[in-house]
Image (cartoon, rainbow, N blue to C red):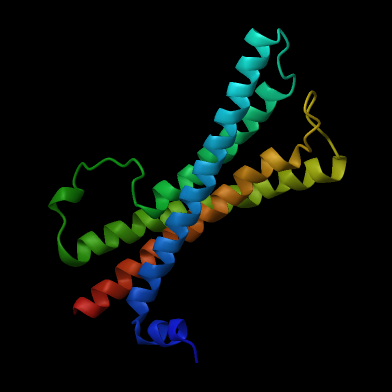
Length: 176
């Protein structure tokens, strides 16, 4: 057995969930950062082309829009993972103990349910775009690629929410 496997065996289940959460957060950050970096490079190249060589990159605007869609939906999954979604804190501040746990699970359950529903609906759109073979007008990018951002983003939001629920439940159980 290698050293990594031995270390992981000593980690309790709540800590394993926390490790998974950290790994997901790193993966989301890497995807978002890479998307933004690629968008910046395309934008700079387009500006240089336009003002120095008097010729812009035809596919730049369209590609930047598609990158932005991916960044937004992966960013939404990262927000869900970090429990940073918008919510009205009208009475939740006053909830304690089991009522607070029920409230949190109701919120997470709603997010997870809606994310799975939206993933299912967006999968239909991705399938249609794939079957039709439709491509974007200028860049020629298959349209199922930008539409897949919605499907994968909603799946990632559901997974992120499930990880939060598991972490909360396991840490509460551990605390007694």
